[in-house]
Image (cartoon, rainbow, N blue to C red; front, top):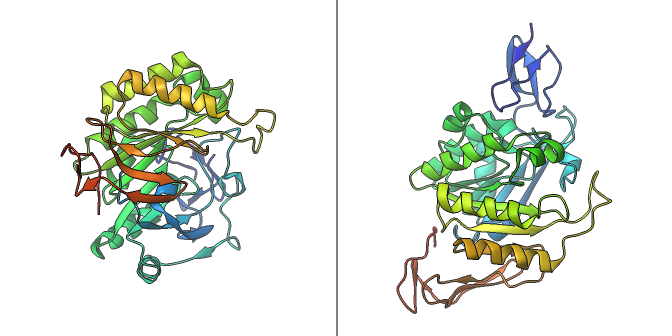
Length: 322
């Protein structure tokens, strides 16, 4: 018999032995499961700034894990070699949660990052691993598009300490035409994550020329973040480069990133960071404008932070710091 998947808003009805839209979840004995539990496509040691997270243990390393598949279908996906690949035996490799923890300790990683493809679709393995990681005294972060049902989110994020959520644009039409998805579930995920005590949240929007970089759309996005989350939630504005099925769209000019940054700051957002461009991404104190963390690429230097306070004026800087 077929079974319906409840992990994400697609609610795919999956026939036995077939796959859902994500290419990773299948039906076995009337139950929907991850097709090959614990199958990984990649494992790397990354600076946490690469996730990107700028206010969560800056300067630390994250052992980053990826699998196969995704429940969104973005035209310009920059990880399409794994996100559009079907989860199959013979691909990738497997590590147990205990082996992942040992690898993290070997390479002096304080954090495990579930990233590269969408962690939501391999939620069961993420949850098992995250629980053991937390018990071992390490931290868990997730890089996700946030396209998940609220019921799933409540157990999926129970042992996750922080996340960067890819808010792809700010209209239902954009989500439908670019990602074959919907905006509203992502907004619900963002509100839920922001409500979790001691959970750290950052947001990334990839600015795609002529697609989601309209100033009015951006202003609405930034106003929503300020009103429904907080002006202190860090927002990353990342430059698009042509890839996958969007080779006809040019790369994002640096000027577009700077203009969007100004819109965000005019709305009242306190921490807005450019990505994929040669523009300074320092963290400045929102009270006295002193640089508290300087960044050059993924290299950081903590110059004006004492604990979680600006050394110059003692203003508390939101985040989780070493």
